[in-house]
Length: 297
Ligand code: NDP
Image (cartoon, rainbow, N blue to C red):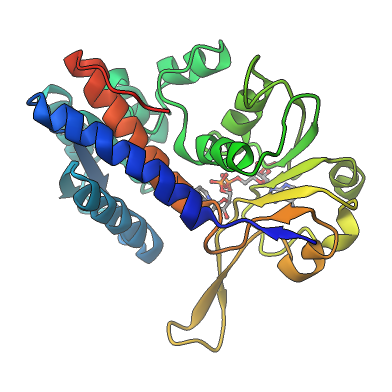
């Protein structure tokens, strides 16, 4: 029997906890605020930002949204960030990635006040994560940790293979799993496009985390019996559907299901957790900045 992991249900439970923290903060006169900034006309980015704003509204976080023309100079984005850094009603700032080619991602991420960096991508927050003293854990890897905990999939002593080494998913995922303590203590292998004999690596996994952005690249033949499969990939592929595309993961769900003890679907797996953990980080940011204590699990 393979467990099909219900990411929506796990996210709903976390969101309910965050909502109650948001209420506590608001009652103390600190309504948590999240600002999203979009400098892109990419349809997927627009969708992600609007989902984040909807989540804010649902749980009592004040949402602020700003759009910047993708052809505008980088300074337009820098000035917006500077304003948000000093705005006391904004506790979290999220600049939606990717950015236009003429805007340096590093410059943008470093400009956000690290206390308001609810994505956890500022170098100070990356350093804290690596050092085992995370302030804001990056949302997607943190969401994966929450899924593993909710499903009782132990990381301690497990061989975990992460496919992908991006700054957003692969690297922070590996770092979280390496830390001492709950949700960590794993033996982690990080694979990427230059990895030799990827299948040999993935077959050695007790837990496989796919974050490569390549549709269905990992199939059942690359997995061992009983593996837990977490598919982070969200890929649009052409399909005879109303929108002209459908979403698939990095894992070939049907063949992987035959081998896995548990597996996340796409959509409905990791995606909902990413948004829930962003809300979590925003509530944490409001708490840290105001000194009002909340009980975030
Ligand atoms: P990136 O493109 O930044 O990174 C992809 C990584 O995968 C790179 O390290 C790359 O290697 C590696 N890779 C690419 N092709 C292969 C291959 N054939 N074999 C082994 N490794 C490979 O992507 P992201 O990390 O930003 O995102 C990964 C996926 O996760 C995407 O589908 C994205 O849409 C999805 N995503 C989902 C989220 C969610 O909420 N569920 C949130 C964020 C992302 P190299 O470094 O050598 O180039």
